[in-house]
Amino acid sequence: MPPGSRRHPTLLIDQKEYRMEHSRLTSSRTMKVIAINGSPKDNGNTAQALQVLLGEIEKKGIETELITVGHQMIHGCIACAKCREAKTGRCIAFPNDAVNELLPKLQSADAMVLGSPTYFAGINGTMKSFLDRVFYVAFSNGGLFRLKYGAAVAVLRRGGGTAAYDELNKYFQISEMSIASGSYWTAVHGRVPGEVQQDLEGLRTLRVQGRNLAYLLQLAERGMGHVPLPEQEEPIATNFVR
Ligand SMILES: Cc1cc2nc3c(=O)[nH]c(=O)nc-3n(C[C@H](O)[C@H](O)[C@H](O)COP(=O)(O)O)c2cc1C
Image 1 (tube, rainbow, N blue to C red):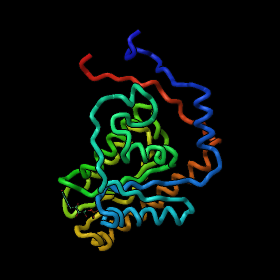
Image 2: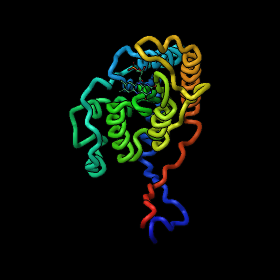
Image 3: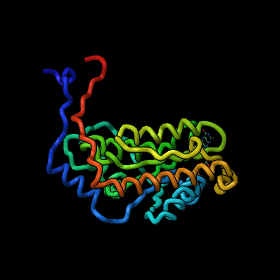
């Protein structure tokens, strides 16, 4: 029977892997949130916005780490698909940059916060190169970020922030991750570093989003081991022409 015509989806129930994943999620340890700053500036508006969000998470006793990738040389994905073949959970084409360096950290984190400055009404180029490769590896290796939590932050001077915010959220959505929202689309305003501190409504949104992410993590921590994980389905890839 061709894969698309299955009446019942095939579930990926490798019991050994399932138990390992469950015990990974239920083992007692401090929860951790990794924030990725796509800006080339270590202390620019994006970093400062992320710090506001992370500050609320830390107040709830959850560990956080902020990592800047925007100043690094990060090649875009070259669609070699070697990560799909090798199944090592790593990028094979460019093994020695921030992608492979940070994949293990992101894999072991409970949540990730992605922050990007808005460049030409989208996320900045280095951030896109980084995220395309990280998430393609994760996607091609059985869903490494499945059931983790995410929050997105875009920073802009004037226009295109919600497009960048949408772009960031799409990485979470294709990865079976749950998303923490703020009280508005998190596109926070500022041009020169520090100006973001004057966007009072934006700062409030960041604080709300941080507390909401912490709340989701606390719920997850208490639910783990009590609520069964959702079954994972075997992928079906159709491209509308065959
Ligand atoms: C190449 C480039 C393109 C930009 N494009 C936009 C844009 O489309 N819309 C906008 O509002 N701001 C744009 N900006 C301004 C930045 O988004 C803004 O200054 C932001 O605060 C920078 O964040 P950072 O300090 O974290 O790097 C652009 C800046 C640069 C350098």
